[in-house]
Amino acid sequence: MKPIILTISFLVAIMGAKSQDTTKVKKIQKRIVIIHKSNDSLPNEKDTIVINSGEVEDPDCRNCDDRAPAFISSTDFNFGFANVKRSASDGNANNSLPELNNGKSFGIGLGQNWGFNLIKGKLRLWTGIRYDIKNYRFANNNVNLNKEAAKFGYKVDSSGNAEKSKVVVNYLGIPLALGYQTNPRDHEDGFSVRAGVTAGYRVRTHTKVNHSSSNKEKQFDDFNFNDFALSPFFQIGYNSVFLYGRYSMTSLFKTNQGPTANAFEFGILIQ
Image (cartoon, rainbow, N blue to C red):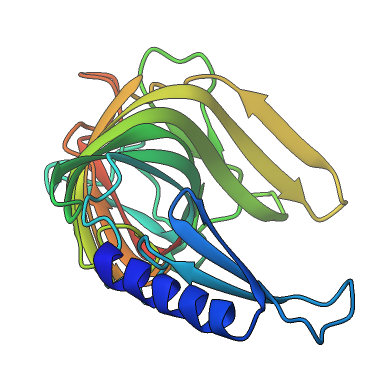
């Protein structure tokens, strides 16, 4: 390529010389600049031609470096329906989990993720940190959980007129997953799928009862909820929108301190 460019530069120089014009050829890094000034030109008039001898940037990136970035990051937000799978042996005793309002029990979360290249940027190892809030709304608005009890339990205020009763559990977790994406450089462009597990630690639990008199009663305790949650997850999506599902392998409550129950969640994730 360079010999051809130099030949063109030489021919231009010869043509300028025959017409008694002034032609200067300069090579600056990967460019050849030809400055041509004719005798008839005004003092400040010059014809300048720039010829690139290096690679020209391709907007379609067809000639770009094929190496995918070794490290990429993303932030995501999820919202989904949350529920609990109960053991059939729990029965209807007071230490079993009260019935939930399925349509108003939900989970939300915020995560910061880092993806490390394994194979051509399309297969990556993902990890990060995330904060999840599980909001379990009881079907009976007059349910009150027993605070500081040896085992999980609750009572129903038959004379109460509460408008809402729920328990909220917060987790701080670290996910570990394998992910595949069709675009090796941009995880928000194209199809992608990810599967892994999140190890979470319960950082706060509280109940909230809204009474018809506009009074709100909050209680903070562990309510015998398990301190740890190990939750496999799966997500699949296109561009920035995903469907996800999670299921906790660990019991929702501490061993022998509550009913046998496992939490699960499904919904939409945006990154």
